[in-house]
Image (cartoon, rainbow, N blue to C red; front, side):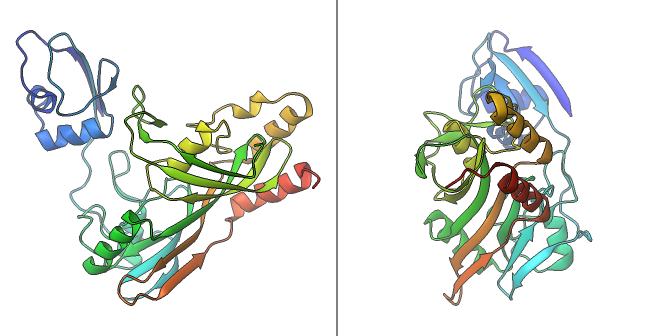
Length: 320
């Protein structure tokens, strides 16, 4: 990974992507991707490729190493819940990145799928074959993968039309007043930190429905239903309500220290037991893209989160 920082010189003209491409010796498409992913900051914020390359602007570019031209099959354990000739449903384990990307050239879900399933849709390209939607690396749970191009197109259309029902189990910090909350806030790249998403005025429309299932001393278990599918959506919307996901080091770091007295001690004990964000895709429902048959899958909490859940219930269940 290389980093460069410079000031746009006098006489610079044209679009920002063309100027940076010439400066770094990269293609415009590569620079456009780096800008979209927040790897290039201008005046300390994420910039758009169509902005002008105005003299005096400060540019900071971080260029990740190139990724392989194509993903290779790897013998990685994979829980395949269902499979037919058109699609597969998998229960992704935590710690597994979905597809190769800078910093994660292999060892991904795609590498595992190529080994265990093989015949994936080519629409996603050589690095994302069959991938219709994603889960964060440290989020576990259900995903549907396309094995044919027709299935890929139909599933993508169903996701866009909000016809795929995705439900998560999440533990959030705090104690909300309401048992049901709908968060409808636009999400986009954080203006200063490329690793984060945020609620921003010019972000993409996003909606998440939260329903409290169980209340503990300083946290609660809830069901989160996605009505859109933005990057980090549940995590960003949860944090925006003041109740970030337990174990989320990006959007909720140190939240356990925000309590007082016995609740603070309980929260610290919970935080010590959580090795990753408490977020699990527990249910996935959709119509089969070719047959139209209703498909409905459920996945219980994985062992690492089940242990945490059971401890929280024993140690901090609020009397009903």
